[in-house]
Image 1 (cartoon, each protein chain N blue to C red):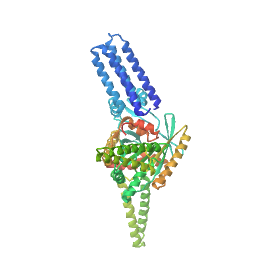
Image 2: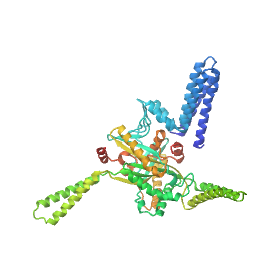
Image 3: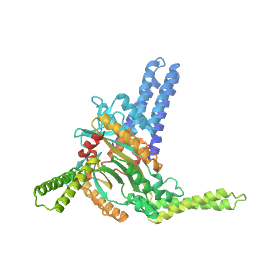
Image 4: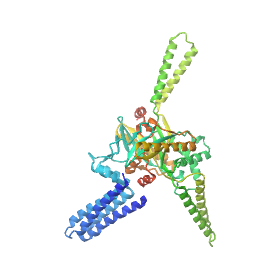
Length: 273
Length: 276
């Protein structure tokens, strides 16, 4: 909500409060009850004025609420650009574009010396201050992997090996060595298939989010992409990795909850209660 | 006008107006007591709304049983402690916890001695914490570098003042070694900060928090799982010696909006004044 709008509401309610105070001051002494009622109203307006600092955005939707549901917006929170590499938000007078940069840091503290750990911790603050012209979000996200495709591949491979094994077994001329090897391969795929279904697999990914306002979508996206490329280059030099701009579902996993907990994983979670 | 000045300005004006009512009611005899009660109630409400609105707003929505729709498919239940997305027949509840890592970033209010030891332990603690969490979460830091020259001038000014104090204490007739040691330590701390600026680090204006999402087949199921996850994260991240407070109300809505775009750092700091 616009800061000026919030201030306007504050001033409006203050004026109403002041009017109540003036009326009380000019009321004859015999009007004690109306004076107290006016005082109550005035103080209530005064409290509402104080709340306008943070809650101006809530006033109008609250008054217009239906069935105790206050609707701030009925629009989706963002739109994905046609190119799928940025999200667009219309907030107040501006159009904002946000771009996500993946920072694949595959380092474990168990492999680091004390000096490396210190440098790594300092790299974190260097990364967040990589650019002083605008704020940046740096996040480390732990999310469930979408194993649908992986499970499908293992399942297809398992079926293929099972078919091969059945054919070899039916063929009396098959050498024992080949049959045993195929049996071993079949056991391996079975184990892999059982293992992958046992628990949800998680992945950790660091990313930076960069936003830029613009007069229109194209301008905002162009500025945000330019900033994101600068941040990607900075991340590359600080952590020594190849940072890249996230697109499509990869990007949505940083924004939308259903992409960080894929439906395939939910059935496993629900089974476990 | 900075946000703190703005708060004081608004609180001042509203309280002066409230006081006007009390002074006018003095003429109404016994009703003066009632007027005082109204004034006290208004005074408390104004102070809470200005300095701890996260206490009052969830109470307000709970009493009125008001749910909020911040965007399509999203709902904020009346408790105001999570944001729920309903999609594909499932409820995804997201909650937030404050987690400012003061000891591990440049912008510590008071640099502690042995900070390097703390920073060395940081990656180990982080890895152990992440390994013990079995559900999705994000650790998020939003920051922007502040003007280095201004920061350096401030540090150098403070160091010069300490040096002056040190030389004055040293030449005093009753020299206290503890005072001198303390001044030396404070000068050393400032020097380390100045050296770190020289090594390329930048002072930082930042906000940090944790976001976690739970999924359920009903709204209450998702919310109760979210509460469990929040509790677990608060336990796990306690090793960092952080202030881990569950974010509720208006500030939670603000954090939700930060998922989609980042406004200026001034706007962020002014919106998240109290649960940082």
